[in-house]
Image 1: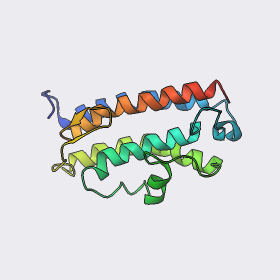
Image 2 (image 1 turned 45 degrees about the vertical axis):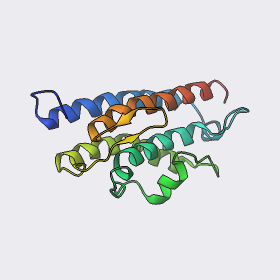
Image 3 (image 1 turned 180 degrees about the horizontal axis):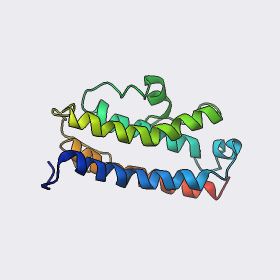
Length: 164
């Protein structure tokens, strides 16, 4: 597990801070766009900026909770997960309220993982292999994998913003 002598709560706080910063930065980056622009799916793309943000939350929830055989965190509904899960695509135009909900979840779900780890919710996390070939053995590795996944979608958002 953790290779430090620091208390687990301090280590988790550091990890979630590292996860939060790129998310906060991309949210600042998209502030200049209208809801119509954020809903635009440019030619050659399958999704839009809002979907990518929602997908970051859904994928994180799937990697951390569903893979562990646990229910989604109470702030992430099954409907939300289904809307943004891997393999999904935008099926409707998202509203400003949808966007605000996603923005809130991008940060609040990172705070929630700290509490869930502290209570031992992930003690039986199973080994699995990502579609990118990374073998994940426990929740610590699942958390360590998230910046790769977020980075991929943040990169997509940065490409989309030039086309909307």
